[in-house]
Amino acid sequence: MKKTIFILCVVLSILLIMWMVGRLRRGGNAKVGEYMASNRDTEIVIYDIDDLEAMAAEIIPHGAFDYIRGGAETENTLRRNVESFDAVDIYPRVLTGVEQPDTTTSVLGTVIAMPIIAAPAAAHGLAHTSAEAGTARGVAAANTIMSVSNYASSTLEDIAKAGAGAPQWFQLYLSKDDDFNRQIVKKAEKLGYKAIILTVDAPVGGNRVADSRNNFKFPLSLPNVSKKTIKTKGHGVGAVFAASQNKLTPYDVMRVKAMTDLPVIVKGVQHPDDADVAIWAGADAIWVSNHGGRQLDGAPASFEVLKQIAERVDNRVPIIFDSGVRRGQHIFKAIASGADVVAIGRPIIYGLALGGWRGVESVLDYLQMDLQRVMTLAGTQNIAEIKDVSLRPRCDCVQCGGI
Ligand SMILES: Cc1cc2nc3c(=O)[nH]c(=O)nc-3n(C[C@H](O)[C@H](O)[C@H](O)COP(=O)(O)O)c2cc1C
View 1 (cartoon, rainbow, N blue to C red):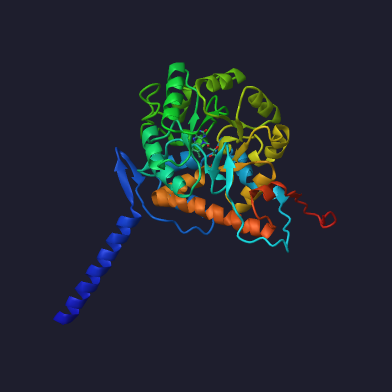
View 2: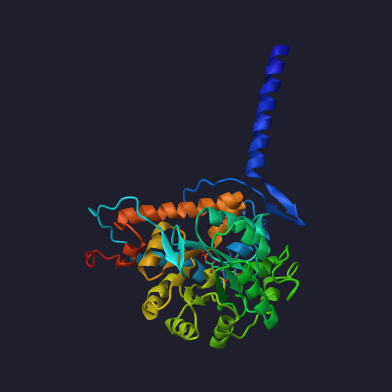
């Protein structure tokens, strides 16, 4: 009897230790002020990027999750961002001799392992205690570019340090305070950021109904802007946007160009004429985006406008594309429609919540692997070959099938 109890105790102790080690490694949630953020530290097994949203909903507090996931109003544009990729098909080519396709590419002189980069997004501290510093580490591990919002919850210094020399771009919402604009751009330059992204599609915040219903307030400060321009902790998205410059013109692109020697990327372009104007004003790259459906609901899906814009840009400057990219086939279709690289928003934040920097790396590795698979099945050996592919408009009727 004694022996049985002893064995039982030993087994239970082993199980307890295994559970504790597993929990330590995976992490759980930790208190940051009054806010409970994830502090997990683990790779994530990904079968489909779409699964991450529901998984992240389990660990990101409700109001913050809605802020990250949500779009404007009816979320029509948010939904269409993903659905629009189905309007075209990739015509697979066989007997092409393609093997282990190469996803390496370059943008604005920076060589990266894949045509997939991190989009700038505010307040990663909502998803994980390591915040943007964690994201930067994961993005650096995946050998690609980290874009940093000026509404980040880590300092620019910490993010640069966590990236350990990997390429990073700094995203600016112009503040009404021009001294602040100059100072932060200079600071980013000094810290080694390689480009300035000027976001122009958010003169005001979109009507995000879930945030209003939840009366969402940032539970953490946004340290790169809070002291100088606005109080961010305890304030809603509207108050944060209110501190930025609402009226934007081509002159503002010129102004930012005059502040820095770094390339300036204009983010949030959705019309070919605006691409022309931005290039005329000095943009070194165009970022086609509708902000992940978070701004103007009822606007077209980002992918729907990409080809027209690319035709107008006509290789004068590189094109970065985002909004709704979730799969290798989406990346392939975007590049075949004129994008040079694509950026990923929400799935990277979900990866951060689910696994910290390792989770971010898992998301990027998964997308790279998925792109490689699509490239193999489509018969393209490298990124240049994807650019030469003609996508096939989808046709549901039997008669118009065929080439
Ligand atoms: C939570 C969240 C915060 C964002 N914050 C910013 C920001 O501060 N600056 C910016 O230019 N874009 C911001 N965006 C937009 C992203 O840069 C990107 O355009 C969008 O997320 C891409 O769509 P996707 O999430 O479908 O990939 C944000 C997006 C999300 C989801």
